[in-house]
Length: 318
Ligand SMILES: [Mn+2]
Image (tube, rainbow, N blue to C red; front, side, top):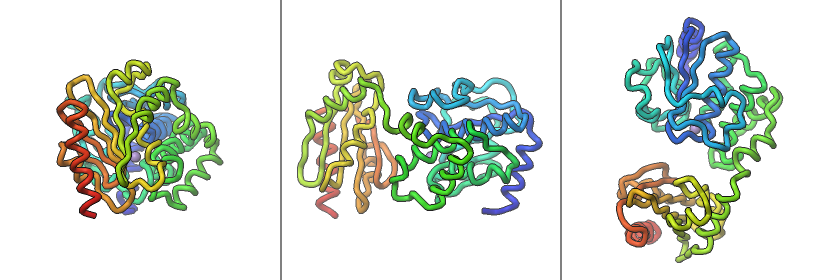
C-alpha cells in the first residue's frame, strides 16, 4: 500500500480533535469490530470520538467493550469523518445527510467505490478489522485488550471462524497478535458465532422440518406463522442458511423468508463454480457469487416457484 497515503491518513488522525467513526446499516461483526477497534484506540490517543451505527448493535456483539458508547446517529460537528467496512457511500444509511462527504474510507470489499478523500482499500484483507490491525501502529494508535477484542471479533466473524476461502496465513498471524494483546479468542468466537437464542433454534426447527431436496438443490421456507410460534423476533433466517450449507453433495441452498410487507426475502448460498448473485439480480437483489439475496414481491409459494425455476437453470446450464 502507498506509504504516502498512510502517512497522510496518520497526519489527519493527528490533526483532528473530534472524529466520527461510522459503519454500514444492518451491521455485522466486522462493522461493529471496526467501529469499536478504531474508535477506542483513537479515544486512548486523547481524541473526542463518536461511534455510530444507524441500526445499533446486534445482541451478539453487545458484550464488546465500548459498545454502549455506539450511537444510532451523529451529533454535532466533526473535524474528520471515517467510514469503516463500507463498500459505497450510501451504506451508512441516511444519518449523514447533513454532513460533508467522508474524509477517510477504510474497507476490504472489492467493489469499494473509493468515495472518500483518502481511501485505504485492501480487497485481500479478510476483514476491515484486519486492515486496522495492520495499520494501527502506522497511525501511532495503541491496541490494548479492548481494541484487540473488537478487531479479532471482526476477523473471526467475516471469516466465519477462519473457514472462508480467503482465510490467509496473514489473517491468522494478526489473530495471534491480537490474542497476545489480550483478546480472548475462544470466548469471543463462542459469543459471536456459536451462541444463539433458544427462539432462533426453535425457528430453525420450523425450517428444518420442511426441508426439500431436488438433485443438488436444497431449500426450505420460514413463514410468519413459523416465526410467531417460535417467538423469534428477527426478520431474517436466524442464520439457518449456514446450517444448510453443511449438507453433503449439495451445490445450492435457498431459503425463503416471508415478510410482513407482502414480500419474501430470498437467500442463496452456492458451492464454488456457480454465481448466485446473477439470479439475485434478476429478482432485484444482489450480493457475491457464492452468497446472495433478494426481496421479492408475492406470496411465499409463488415466489418459491419462480425462484426455484431460475435456480434450477443454473444447475442445468453449468
Ligand atoms: Mn467486512
